[in-house]
Each structure stands twice: as structure tokens, then as C-alpha cells.
Image 1: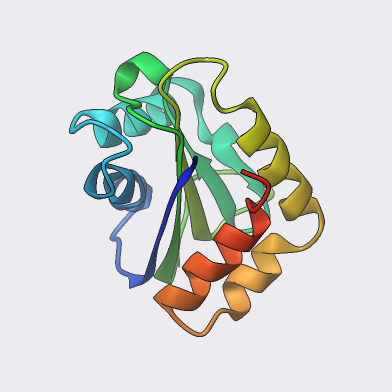
Image 2: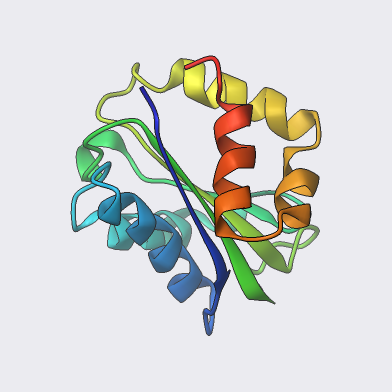
Length: 145
């Protein structure tokens, strides 16, 4: 079972704060440990903004051993988009934070998420009318869990 949570109209001064807030939603939901948000920031610091997958959307994550307690996905919609330094896909207004307890547990969830993104999930999330609508859209996208 995937833990799903959502936060809307979140303010962040820069990409680091946006990543921390997105990953903290997983901590608050019990899917990740307290160190997970900083681990997610380090991923971008060490590897660059590759997590910005498409226009305006970032997939926030870190390695399972960095604090994944359960398979979890959180959507965070920012009040004002932030720049990650991606040459094509900035600025980011949607962050999907993801965690998993081991390298294999999440394969199905990531596969469903990828299919849902290809089928317009980002547009549905942007059109959502609030936090509960955001959560509902994400849960529907991951419904095969």
C-alpha cells in the first residue's frame, strides 16, 4: 500500500526549501524518517537538477537507506514556482516527493506514476481545486496499488 499525501499553495523561497517541504510531507505522513528531506536536497546538490522531469515538475527523492520507511508519494503545489537551474523545464510549480523502504518495493508505484504522468497527471494536478482534490487525483493515478 502506497502512502499518498498532498499539500497545496505551499510557499518556498528557493528550490532547497521547496524540496524540503515536499519531502517533509512524507515524514509527516510516516512514510519517511526525519533525515529524508535533507537527503533529497543533497541529491540535487550532488547531481544537479535532473529531478526536474518535465516542464514545471520535479520528482523529489533519495535512496531508500536515507530514510524511506514505506512506499510514499506526496504532491506539493507551490504558490509561486521556483527555479532549479534546469535548462529546459524551469520554473517548477509541482513537486512529487517519493520514498521507498527498499530498492524493489517501489517499482510498481513508479511505473503507475510514469504512466499517469504520460497521460496528463501534471495537468490534472494543476487543475485541482485544493489539497483534497490534489490528493484524490494522485490516489486515482496510483489506484492499482
